[in-house]
Image (cartoon, rainbow, N blue to C red):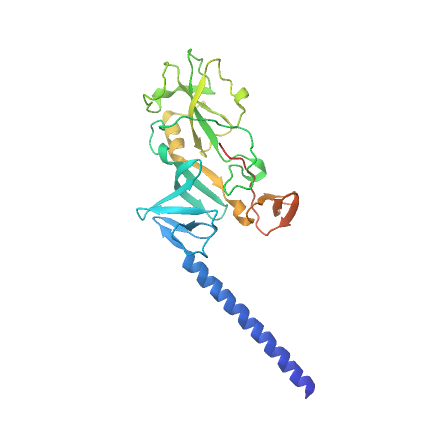
Length: 273
């Protein structure tokens, strides 16, 4: 009889624990469902949250704004305002379009400082490098030169034939469009006196520098397509960054320490600044 009582007592404990687990899972599912929101065609779910989302929703590093009930916006200081074109929850990417680049015209602000090399911001919420350090973006540069340049497959289009040039930019009749391909400034092949006035970022497939068959229509599509960033650092806590190890296992890193996670995707990054 004592053995039978012990058995039933153990069974009761197991049942109680099982019911608690089911209750907790059900509560978590309800919480997650209450956090899912829509803005136009976009489904907003973890790690993203809207400004007016309940406090328990999403990750505070990934706040978006829904304007006019249908336009999803990312305000990313100090880099500006971006239209969210799409969010891919399978490969941890978000596609953005600069607020000032939503037409074929030149943006109303100059390039400022642009860095083609990696920076020290690998714990940032957003990164431009994909798997194995492969860049997800390419810069389209507007170059102005005092002297006429020899157009080639690398500098191949007089800019005014493809985009509308604002009076705010000096024009010598020698402006051109050039792809950066993540080169350093010294390797861009710019002639003496040439100046990079501004840039667009794009994730449109440029096929590794084969520009010979690209038309003005293609350039406009690239501009309006926008650029992709990864948000895979959302898999790690704040101050950590995510990457793939040699066995394609997702890990998070901070101060030389490794913490394995279960996600099969990767990204390391630099920020355009």
